[in-house]
Length: 233
Image 1 (cartoon, rainbow, N blue to C red):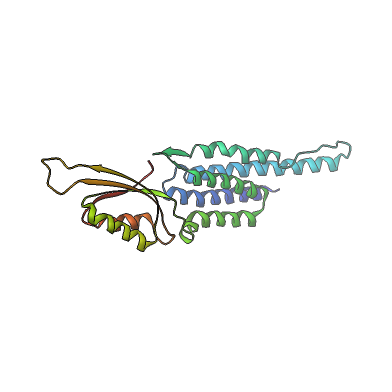
Image 2 (cartoon, rainbow, N blue to C red):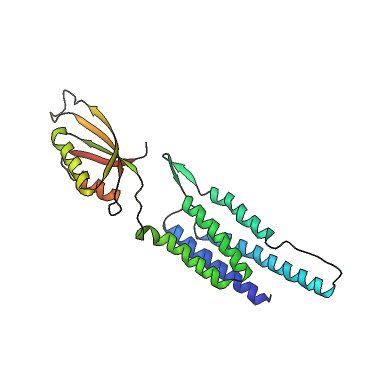
């Protein structure tokens, strides 16, 4: 393998890591452009080294048939693929009982795999893989929307009018109520006589065409509803 081809493979690894990392950095994820570039370049270096080792072994055996030297193809690269999991685990964190960072960890692992493919010289495969990773990160969620089951907390007054409004809104929007918890706060004697304050916590499953932002905005517009928010507790 010539020096310029080694350089080309490393430059392609930089490009692949850069474009994937920029997408993650734009979304303010833990691992950004530099991390993805370093992962991709490092994996590519290992693959190039392994390719050179194999070429040297073949040359040595051809020059001296009695040596019989063998090399295990792909063993070092396999350690890169498994070892990158430790770096990916560092991007996963828990906040308010919600796990985040799994997609970034997966993108790091894919970047390492693409770096190995690039280092071995499979340029077309590495570019196609890079394109698929970017499509998955940037476009797939917009094309195929999956609404996770979440809990929506609604604080309101005037129960007699507000409850029918909420139920009617859910029915028209095709929202399924899987569970309901409620809490009542009696109004203080010195507070304005607007009745008790109620807090209903709905566990909802939304249709694909609707987002939780739409639900919150439409419910919050009702005059007797004080606040609407999603919660994980």
